[in-house]
Image 1 (cartoon, rainbow, N blue to C red):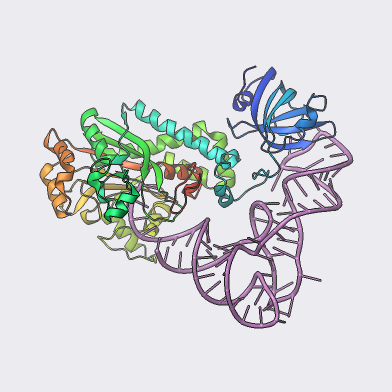
Image 2 (tube, rainbow, N blue to C red):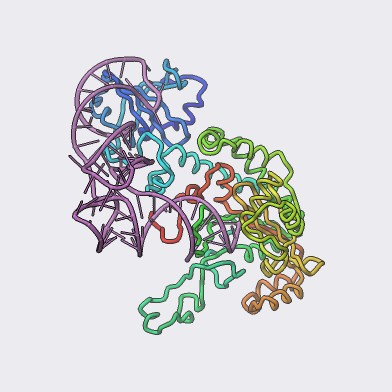
Length: 459
RNA sequence: UCCCCAGUAGCUCAGUUGGCAGAGCGAGUGGCUGUUAACCACUAAGUCCGCGGUUCAAGUCCGUGCUGGGGAGCCA
């Protein structure tokens, strides 16, 4: 008999004569002559209650199937006479795949997130993490759906790169050199390495994506990204996923319109497709979550320039640990103040001083600021970072000279400005940070299956 | 990398002035009940994070290392 998923059975509008489910025991309550088994198969947050009667041929074994055990159950789905569930299954046959021994680490009680991180291979079997990873999957699909509907092309940019693009943070080196040889020579001889030059894991697919935007029009990348920064915070991991749309014939305003539409689309999608899982987070993780999601969907995001933000921060008279001054980058406390206390909603900050932004951002007419944009959201801080790109060859080369960047390494990037250059723009959105935003989960290690952080690569 | 906090039973934690190691939950056993984080009784369960020191005596005080958490920097 074909296996049915529990989410489909619970959605049935009538009882069913014969069903077969396969899943794991979440909890078991024994009576004298029968047992209640709550079975979860991962298809949804809810369990289905199974009644196992003592007349089952293997009843003696069934009562030993404690929390964590895996079973296949055939029986009749009837309306439940008990309170708390619509249907239950009266088992006619129970096959036991595996009985989890009594040292199974997950108990039918609340565990701390810290403990569950030490058993990351088992934590998706809990309500909270099951819900988080179903939502993660759903958002990933919604991203593709959003871009497919808009006629964007999905682009897979290289994970191994040759240039230290952007100079953004520490990179992971990729090498096939024999450590013994390196020791013998006393140095890494990259000419003898696999690629004949230094290679690293990517920190961004942007430069590649620009080349394809200037060919296919609108593209996006969505994949893993690596940073070797020694960051120990609840918002950083060494390997994470990033969404990077890149659009030809697009300016900074269009870029912000796009980012706002994206965030609203994704939040709506989660609300419409993950209601049960989302409820768990509103109830047990962050009671203010529904209000925040309302704000994300129903309010127009604020748009202010960096200069204006500096004025607001100075006028606030609030005591900040770090100085607020034009020309300095905003600190976490400043970003949080703007998004959480002053505007109380997402805010795009634009037109940052060129001195604190990378070379590829488009120079504004004032020659002081660039067409950069960051989207700050409550609780998370920076969710999106992007810009209109500098499309004017002379200006771009001038900026690279100012910043002492080796133009020859970027020859292909510069050629895109030589041949048919057009205004274009894009941004990067941290996928895990978005999941944190919509679930209320406060540690990034809890929204990625097996987190990689400094000193930690178990699993 | 810096600052702060924590580490005691499988989990969550208490442990007084330095004086015999504790609770709840979980697990095991028995009982009871169409149960709902079931209930009742009993039982087992410890390198008090590691190393060193002070002391008649250290879970407790001191030093040091490791691990985890919170915050900061950097960023998505």
